[in-house]
Length: 412
Ligand code: ADP
Image (cartoon, rainbow, N blue to C red):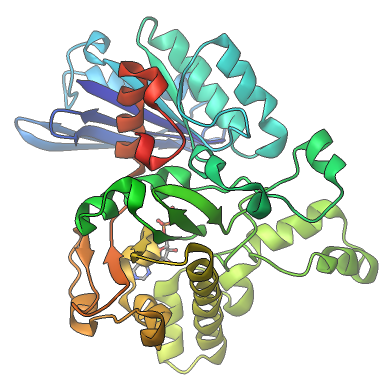
């Protein structure tokens, strides 16, 4: 079975063709800078002759042209991996926002396309790109079943006490103001992997999953289901991120408006693109921050201290939410690669049952692994996320048994 996974953004299309026999990618790549004067294509294909790489620069007017190039690269004689589009059995599309309507992945039809369109106000930066990708794929792959997999779906099990904001109820009724949560595809993937690694059935496993990358969110998972998550109505809430502030006093917005004369767009831009690690110390990549702090840069040290502190507050809070925590699960660019951050997050939590093994923490080599001591009541795991594989798995699952696909990882 071959599943093509498509993640279409506002100016890029990422793709991965997976052979679901061994769940390995046959091909993957990225078309970026769509609509700009010069676009960029990066493609890799795995054939019997080894891995073939291809890059090119050319203007790419729109998503249709981007997808046509992808189709061409997948099937071309030089480096293509399939002899025709009919080899593709299904297509899975990543969609960031499905609101309350899409609680699980769904086969795409005209009604679903309209549903994704209706959620554009909640995800104006993401859903339009997804729609462009979906509409083009429906034209280019007629007859191939296509599925929308939503980042918000995993969090639809969060109970009302955790998803409502303390604002007038009409804001929820009229405008859908509530916590939705994001990165659900990744949190669902590592939840299932952790259950396997811990040998605890999915419906019994309690976890705190830390998806820490440039964008970051932390989720409390009870019995395989999300019961709270740090991101909210938008991906701005929660922990400190690369360029996003995370949670702050909402009155900051009014204060900036009144005192600095900034309008809403300017303030949102400031909080989304100029804040977080970048705002604190001028760098948003932790590798640069480590380099600078080791050279004595105090702001870089402050940025790291604040980042870790914001993670630890959620870990403590979610331990209270869960009652019993089986494991902390680190994933994402920072969670997978930064042993210093993992060590600092787990430091002095022995009383809460977390005992990191410093040697194991340093020796992580890319595979799912336990990095806590054998006597640690709460295990600590590092699990590389694989959102494309999760999308492909959910795609096949929903096509083979549409009714079995609940929002929880446990139902998949
Ligand atoms: P995104 O949210 O864009 O998907 P990623 O999950 O790819 O982000 O994470 C990217 C971030 O991970 C980088 O900005 C950097 O801070 C961090 N990172 C990546 N590699 C390393 C590394 N080897 N050591 C420390 N941090 C790393």
